[in-house]
Image (spheres, rainbow, N blue to C red):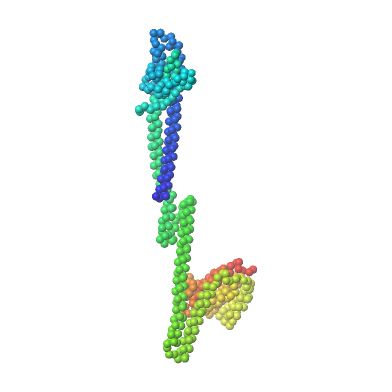
Length: 465
């Protein structure tokens, strides 16, 4: 069963129980008050009857002596009740003998008025009341014992309360109808409300299913500021993180595939050449000149493999825990670079004053790699500018095609035009790694046939002021 259905049925169940308890309480209190009011009325009628009956005692004694005492009592009893309302009936009896009864009920026996044994017991003369059900009718009976002369009589007042019970049953029916109407309205309202409230959860489920199928760009539109809206925001953040992670994994996988492909391509040429010349040296008759030529090619290709290994070692070995940034004077860096480029007139070196926090050997490696790349791009003039703010290397080479710009810092990447040129496509990747170790990033601007500018900015906290 869905959560929405469970909440609906559970809430409706609680509502029905609450309505049932409220209706039962209302009916019970109303019934009690109505019965108490009716009982009080009947008791009042009984007290009036008894009081009037006793006040007529002198008249009973003065009545014609030819009448029996019992006849006189019956006469005056009837005289007292002849103007009573139709719903009220009376009973006058002496034990089991009925002197007057227009109710058809043995009230004295019902109230157990004739079971008293001691006349001096005050409880004998207390008013007794009872509610009884006879057939389809309900009655409220009140009665008491009275002594007239030497005889004890029982006087009872009987009032039909069938109409009262009919009202109670009607009240119960009305409560049930109202409860059903309220329940139906509440159910419909709750279904509509829960459907609207749980819509974000349904969207959440749909989006989760879509993401599980690979649609990582899916997101939920957030409305409101309740818990469901907060959940939707958290889900969107999670979906975005998953999308970013998947993109990163795919990019890493693609880069790894390119690395493997490039590495196999770079190694294939020298390995093939070495194997070919080695086979020739072993299995073919060669002149001394041819043999020297073959050995020369093997030496060149072996050194090429050695250079590839060295570059990869440098690239992999450069980690933050293996270098230490120290304060170096720009003047010392300038001296080292001038010694490296002694006699070269195509490089113009400009170095400012001051000092920076860096690794001198790594900076020299970065600058020389950028200059080597510029030379491979047919540059005839290279301007190097070094200051406390950063490093800039500008050349007038053939430039970099726009489609190659986003790949130039990838390992083994070489533009098509330079595929056959010397190099492995590791230089710029190594330069970018060195820049990252100095908390910076190598940037490039280039135009075809005009040249390129490589630059990095030293962060503020690495400057010595």
